[in-house]
Image (cartoon, rainbow, N blue to C red):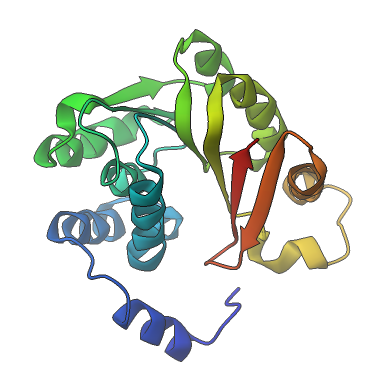
Length: 213
């Protein structure tokens, strides 16, 4: 679902920062070789993630849902020199393309891949995070939030992707639509939880920015 016209999206992209060459190559290879390439963050959202990271200047970043690694590289652009990015995904077949582009970037040695269920991996990470990007299975968004909140530094930022879910958050809820049901609860939680302050941005499929108080 497009929330604005394709023409306006093109104008926005053309008047935003240029997509770096490495990410353009990753974008192209993802569309050529990987199933469901639209899961890629892409040029415009990638530049938003990069800008937010540069404003936050995080030391430690956590990404839940790596896909081919595009968003991880965008987030690394604002990471401090001594920083680390930990990224979690369940798809072993994507590890090779992720590492290929991580190692072509300036941050290859600072990016740590974790293969498996995020629910199992997050408790093993004995790190305090300044920035977290949640972009994985929607059914677990509430669980991820509660698991990462105690691991956040004060003033840390939690980014949550796909929170508009192709506009389904405004449609009558279908009985078996677990993802939309969870996202509706998740959006309410982010708005009302006193531990954070939140703004929901209508970027692509919806991006929430939550700051830990």
